[in-house]
Image (cartoon, rainbow, N blue to C red; front, side, top):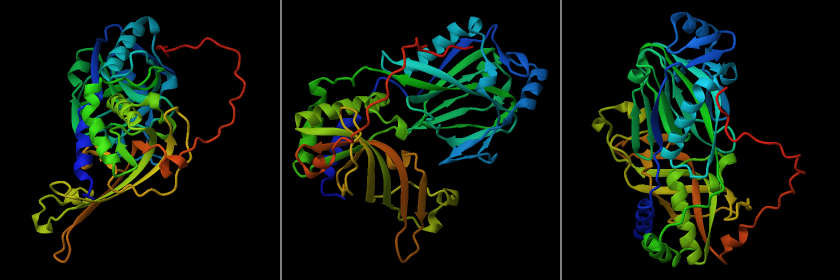
Length: 428
């Protein structure tokens, strides 16, 4: 795994210096004065809600499910809250529109959405967390193409606890919204949907929140970087390609299969994709998007007697982190070329030393981890599996490039007569 490592490390450092303009989460406040909810079967609910309104909402609410792979489950050990479907909740546009539009705009700007992006919020549900209720660390499901982020609108109510903790690529943001809610303010908390986040247990009272899926559509090209910012990347990539015909860069964000497109790359991923495409073209290579399934193995020589907290071991997390990377298997599928066309999946690839990452192994949102303690006869080890979007630089004229032919698609059906489309679903 070490033969090309110095060059791989240099490429990673070059890419890490290319940051996006936004964050992975943002919290914006608006006044809640005069706001209320209209809920089917309940009627008008003041904010903060009265005890009678809370009782009526809870009477009609259902336990909150969560997604596990291809299943939908209800398990209060993972998610313990109540919810009402968004279709039963209505926001009076005369009261909500200006504040809601301003909150969405501030979140969109802070997350680094392209300036021309059309952001469409779709109300999903009203959530209610009572004493002791919580949602364990998870990621939101991107339920439809174009969904990039989640917006949580925290409503005026009286509670303690219920902090939201959001993690991405080694960074963590914590939002304690109880004081803002108690003072009658509305919190607009936006985050990219693939970020791991949790709602900590509510200590007392009831925490109410509306959740929206944020769909982002843009026609703007990937941003261009000045040539001097790409010089080191070009030199290090050229050095790597002198001994290899491809390079795989594992992006920081994860994307659902239906959402993987150049125009839908998020924040820093978008900036680094632009840089790699520009450099690849200058070096007579093409850049492809793909979905990667990754298995990594690490050295983890820690004796059982040295571990103070075996709970980490149970969850596959070795005390002190991972040791040396021993091996990495990457399976790539759903290839997309620079023109946005789906390509045939090539035969099995031996990527070996050709994988670059700018995110630490332990900061990946793995869907499985295992850890084996040192036994005295052989060393301990750790493995993790995760899914990630990837950029693949392929030298033109190489055998791999020849395999990546666009898949023929049937022509689209005739278009229906034009109908004026609302560009944003406003409250109500």
